[in-house]
View (cartoon, rainbow, N blue to C red):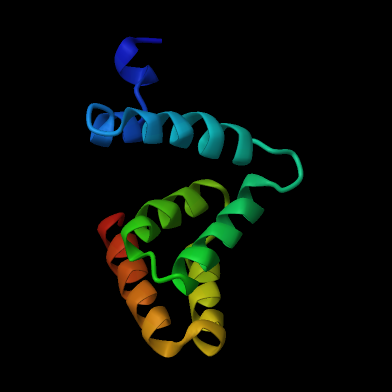
Length: 109
C-alpha cells in the first residue's frame, strides 16, 4: 500500500490544521466506533444518517449517504428514512436532507 492510500480523507482535508481531530476521527470514530461488533455497518449507517438529518448536520450528510449506500442501503431506503423523519424531526429538516440526497444520487448516475 502506498503512502497516498494510507492517508485518510480527514487527513487530506484538515491534517495540517487539526491533527488531533484527525487522529480521533481516524482511530476512534472510524476505528473503534465504526468497527464495533454490536451493530452491522448497514445499521450504523442508517443510525448515522438519521442522526444527521435530525441534528441538521447537512455538511456531513452527503458523505454519510454515500457511505450508507456502500454499506448496503438503497437510495429508496434512504429516501424512506428521510421521509419518515419528516414527521418526527420536522419538515424543514427532511426537506433539506432530501434535497442533499437528490443532488448526491443524481450526480452519481
